Image (cartoon, rainbow, N blue to C red; front, top):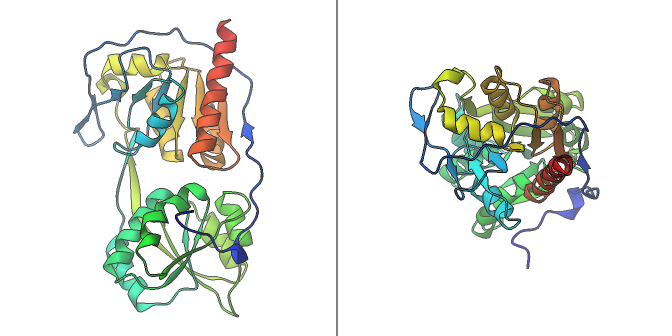
Length: 312
């Protein structure tokens, strides 16, 4: 039995999973990592410790915020793929976070639009603080929808994940989100660094959008490369594939390798991050059509397969 359901009235059919890549490959020499633990400095002068699933050569670098890489690491371990954890970002509360509970308790929005797992987690914290009011939610894709599974089991039907677009992008969500009545009101809790694409798209259709910047992303892109543990950096540079789950992460990685000739593969969680990787000049970019863990793993496997082909 499914843990939750998405109302079919507002759902659009999803296309069959497809992967996208470009075929310009360059190799860097593999480096055997040191068995001893290492650390790297963050932009705030604190330290974080990259970790790995074993002491064998790493094939994949995972770069999400510490504590949020375990699902991907576990999924790749099933394929006997060893990972190096190198967090490039962390999330912090945004300027509007403290106002979100009162916005939920004092207003009845037709839709709450959630476009990332982190936005969903932050929203749920405020929603509980507001007394779990009845809300109808539109999510950008299945990965974001999964954040609500546990909450749906205990929400007494006050939480309704009622819409996912036919393609998991903000642009398509803004185009397909159904109108409710003559005047549809939207609450859009978002990252302070998110673009205006969604609210502009919804506003152009006559929706009344309230955006609240409830969290922000802090990355390590300002860390001078000489301040990063050089053994960790060598391990990361030697890995055939680096995974990224946000535009902030790929920008951080770009800054970190600015003085190197690294040109292996980037496996992005979805199209938006892949577009940023391409704009930044990366040439071996892989991503699934639909963001989510399953498609992401398939993209990583394809990138590794192409790398292995070149070694034969």
